[in-house]
Image 1: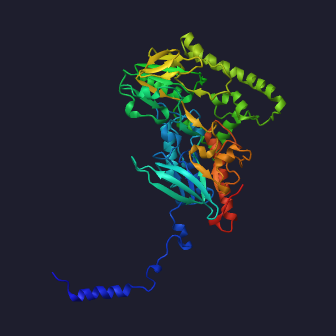
Image 2: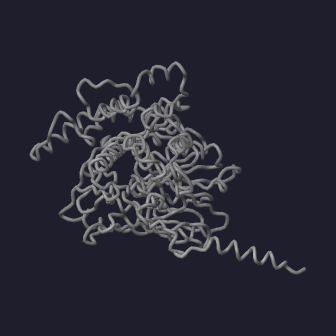
Image 3: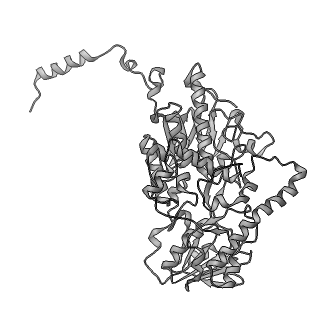
Length: 520
């Protein structure tokens, strides 16, 4: 078949109608100021998609007037949640009352199922926040470098996006504002001991950390000998569930934790009507809990649980009514010990009331002040030691000595195990409080200065734990120079509202919002 001549002429005529003398110059790309708003780079980049990042994003949208389309939260996890994305071990629960801890309950009209919320419920609420305010997440993404461009007034952030084995394409974005939202619990950690690889190489041996629970390797067999390396609330929560399924459960203890009762129950409609009974009820309840932590005069105890009975908490959280001079420190510590003493005696009596074997009970008793180490609260943990398949291996402060092909060494002998559960917690900000350390990535401000160098140097200082000099448009949430509470929601609520207020004022006062720079 031959194309008709008139059709070729038609093609040419149509082409001539569309030819322009400016050729490709007829187009303008996203570098043109007129299209700058359509650029794909985020206006506000949040490194961390947990509670801190989501609460900040919520306040930026609702209080600072920033569109959710201009905010991106990045995280190495596969979804929203932060610590609560990873914490999926059996029995995971928050030991702070959920009505105080779970964020934005009033704003989302959500009613927690339990008074002390399970991990999955907290993660679900964080996902609900993201959905309600149309927040964008970029997941399986790790920050590798962050550098301030003082000419463009932008943070240049380099990242790796993990798509699978050997597939980690590099990405670079330029964001006007940057929040480091790595949180308080940076990364799961374990004691440095010899032979961990030796144990893993043993036949049919299973090693897990509670921060990355492997459900494909747990449950289904009651012939396994399980062992937990104990470290606070996590071990206290997971142990009762392991005891139900393990042939034998060995709980290795270096230092006992205070374990108080926990009044866990389902949220009844009648109870909820008394809790959520007026606008801003959650923030009043949070303030009540903080007031009890700091022994504020005439404070109303709305919570009435183990935390509010722990009067020694003022030794750590401070006391609004008294400033301690250096020469008064020794006397102040003695006063705190006296104040703490009745509570610690009650906790030791609580052990005697629940644990039948006197020898085991004595090993579970704590002999340090209540404000030395974070206490735990659980309804079942102590009575667990009355079960025939549960054994406490107390190392009297020495800890586990080494791993072997068959198990672990403790108290000078080998304990054979099939499953080793490391309930040993996280690297926390108290060890390295620099906000960039949570992301394990360099952050460079003005004059090529690393945030880590400034943080550790003599010129260290923060604006209420949210900003520092020499790092424009950079925000974080640090306890250094800020506040403290056992309830992370309280701490985050104060700082995220502050950040949103600062951004709002900077944009409203600046002549050119696109180049607005917040300085300390």
